[in-house]
Length: 287
Image 1 (cartoon, rainbow, N blue to C red):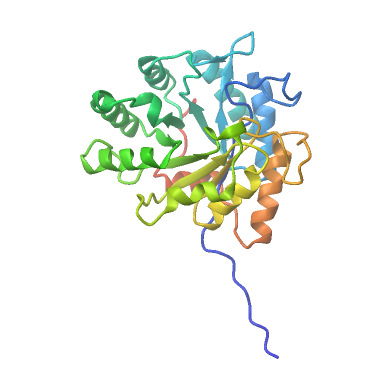
Image 2 (cartoon, rainbow, N blue to C red; image 1 turned 180 degrees about the vertical axis):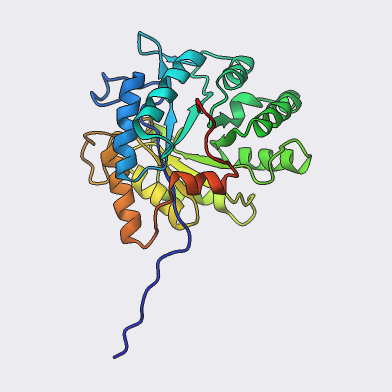
C-alpha cells in the first residue's frame, strides 16, 4: 500500500516565557527569577528550551514589582549579554495596583525597549483616554517599539477593533495577547476559554498569543498555537507541568510545550522570525 507523506504546518508558533510576573516571589518558587542576573539565566535556559521571547517584570530590593527605567535597563543589559539578539525582550507596563496611566507610559518612553505589553483595560479605562493612548502608540511606532495589547475579555477585543476602525491605532494589525482564566474562580483556565475570542463574530487579529492561568496552561496555549497563534508560558501564571507536577523551573515548562508542538507538526518560531512578523528589525543598541 502506498504510504502518504505528512507535511508539517506552515504556521510557526513562537513561545514566549513570562518567568516571574509582578506578584509571585521566590517564596512561591525558589527558581523564580527576581534580579537582572536571574532573569538573564532564565532567558538563556528558556532560549535553549525553545523560547523566542522573554516577558520581563523587574523588582526593587524588597522583591516588589516596579516600573523603573534603570531596573529595566539593567535587566535588558544582562539578558543581552547572556543571549545576544537570539531572544525578543519584552517589558511590561502592568500597574499591579501601584501605578497610573502616565507612569506606565513614561517608563516606555524612558527605556525605549524592543517590545512592550500594554493592558488595554489599564491604559484605556474609558473613552477619554483613547486619544492619549493613540499618541503613545504613534511614539512607539516611530521608535520601532513593538506593542502587544493584553486582552482579558472578548469585549476588550471589540473595543480595540473599534479604535482601529476610528483610526486611533497607528499599526495595521497590532499584536494581541488573549489572557485565559485571570478572572475565573481560582484563576484556572481551560482550552474552551479561548473559543469566545476566536468566534467568527469576533475581530480577526493576525498576530495573537495566548497565556493561561493555572495547571492547564500547556493545553490552553497548545490549542492557541494549533489555531494559528503563539504561546506565552511560565511562572507568572502557572507553576505546573502538563503532568501535574510542580515544574523545577521555567525552562521545563517551555520545553514541555515545545516538545508537544513538535510532536503535533508545528515548528517553533525564532526571535528573528517573530521580529519579522511584527515588523521589527534587529534590536537597537541597549534594547
